Image (cartoon, rainbow, N blue to C red):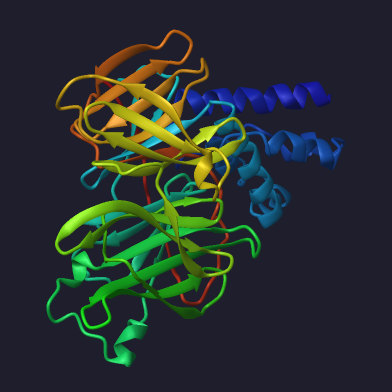
Length: 416
């Protein structure tokens, strides 16, 4: 009997894979009575290994399955299994082209894409970060005070997070001589101690009198309705933060220029620890003329990586987090001019490293024979690339400060 039930579930999963765009239609084929004699432990073992699309359909089978699938403990275990699939090189890559988002399974043909429909009424949203299948978005025209969007496209749910009045204004700091849109940054990630997702907003300015850069951060834990203020100042020059934050090991990282007398001296990494809620810095492996931060899955671990594009293109990885001497060069290649900036890298099942550039190239490198293959992406130049895991996170998320909004999204296959 147990074998028959497993086969029945597998047939339902196979059907869902054949029609990935049919999210909202569920044809009930499984009779809950079939499972009366099936041990609960076996049911859990089966369900926690299924894809999100199947679990969303199975929530309608019976009340006990709905209760199980929406249980925070089950969601956490399911996420862990899905994340382990990524570390086993069965990953998806998230691409952003302007205000459009796409998914691509790294081991599938390059022209096999899944388009994620845009949020209704939010056409100008840019990505703050992506963690555990949740996208944090902001409107670049809101000058750092408009609400953020927390969106899990896999479960078709989004939340708006209202932002407080910047705490630094109470201290009479002003931005009279600068554009606030260029001096506010956001970060999004996970605090593995409190088991909570956190959002960080940072305003920063150059204090001419004291010759320091002042940072004013507001931090929010999503499971609680509270914001906290954190201040920080850095000497040595004027900081100019170039890119969105990258969360690795519970720490958000921003790539910065350090400017002295209007000259870029070198680049560094500003950090914000989500556990201790304090700022810090990480020194890059060497002075880089052009660089981008991202994370890469190597084995079981998520590593901080930095790319450099100059005379050649290379990727550096911090093997032991926080240890400057552990930076090592993972990839080094020469493709000539007009390669663009390296935005992200993914490891395929066969061990090849796939790198995406800002000019729309997908570069595959085989570490065994050092062969390169350069293919143009079937779309315009991306502005964001990252690993993506399909998860149930935020499925039953509740917070009075957040306003839940279900989205009737559908996915459609994009093929050339």
